[in-house]
Image 1 (tube, helix red, strand yellow):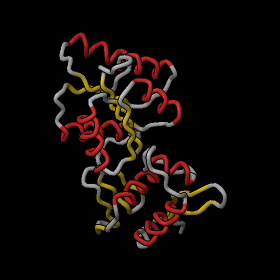
Image 2 (cartoon, helix red, strand yellow):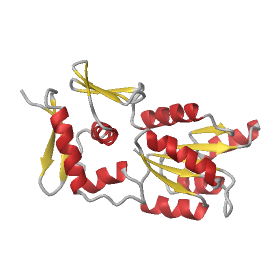
Image 3 (spheres, helix red, strand yellow):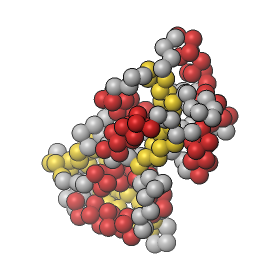
Image 4 (cartoon, helix red, strand yellow):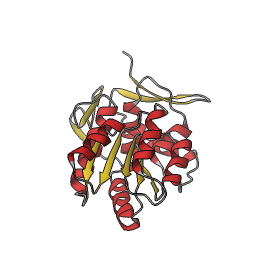
Length: 223
């Protein structure tokens, strides 16, 4: 998934970014409100982690603008404020969750997983499609209960496919989900990952079909 971290504290922002990147998600870091708004105008995100105290505007303003534009991006607010009235205000502005600083990284990862699940209509950490099962917490995949070996980007690519069943996904869309702004992969990289996924899933009852000129479609084998 593609996640935006908005945090003006460079050390904390980079620490959060490293944790999220290790989960295998595409990630962008903004240190000002202006940077955040520019990124939001250019890119659709699956989740945003938003600090309130930014040097040029408040996180409240960013959140309010986001919701006024009817963007449903899930938002976790990171705040030093711990008053009940502050929490009520944040939730009323459209925040989906909040954490008070100092942030526990293990809890932050769990809350990210929970919001991503919810936004995709999932109740569990496990996604199943055909005889393939993804464990989002353990970042593992099984076929008929047998563990298969996938690299991190291959796992995230499969997660994107299974989260968008019935939709043709272009190479550009897939790149946007698993890479950052400062990475510029050639679209041929996606072809390589798809080829590896197909090989890993050869004993499963699902297939990644190439739709010429458009992209890829995940489907179950017929018959």
